[in-house]
Image 1 (cartoon, one colour):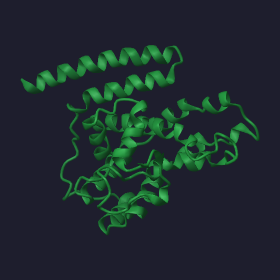
Image 2 (cartoon, rainbow, N blue to C red; image 1 turned 90 degrees about the vertical axis):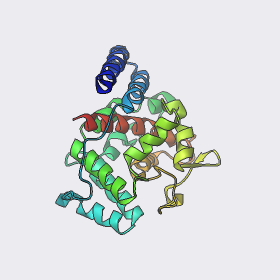
Image 3 (cartoon, rainbow, N blue to C red; image 1 turned 135 degrees about the vertical axis):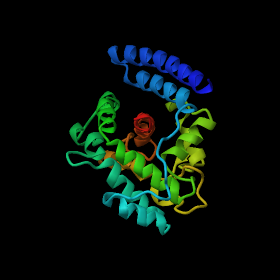
Image 4 (cartoon, one colour; image 1 turned 60 degrees about the vertical axis):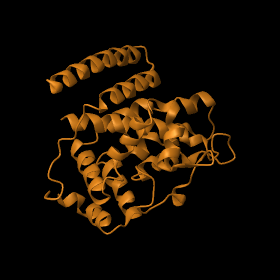
Length: 248
């Protein structure tokens, strides 16, 4: 009976969320649609339970053995980099290509900068194979005793009521990605088990900063804090993809 009520509540939440999402998309309001989508995700997290079983007995596919080896030997930084290779670089394209500023040319306006192809980010993340996301999260969770992985990050977001991109700075502080009011540099992150819950993997998150590195540092949008406008978006989009994969 409890399972029945959980399913009923989930259907109601998803139904309303879907209506709001579709309405926003039809009006071309991508950010608003993403906010509704994240709210829907948070609403069903408590009823979503990963169906991946047998962690200790699992057979690791050849493609993921390098990642598993790095994790098993505590080489967290190498594991983080390998995760980006597996998650954000596919045969035909990469996340870097999707968000690169190359198309802007030598000069650009604020409107051009903020009209970055958010839709392409959504489409790219939606194309990431569920196997990649599930196995990567499984390996991170297994070798870190549940401290790291997308599931751990989602747990922190859920417990602290992180429901949209306006709360991303708070989440960054909780995950150890921000310090003294700033997003910290990748090299300053903590690559050991003393890191905050959900601290890793994170290299894919900083990939957006590298992709936007073409923005001249003297330009007001080339300063340290500004490229972060894409960080928040990609985290929520990837988490939505992750949730969908867990349901399959």
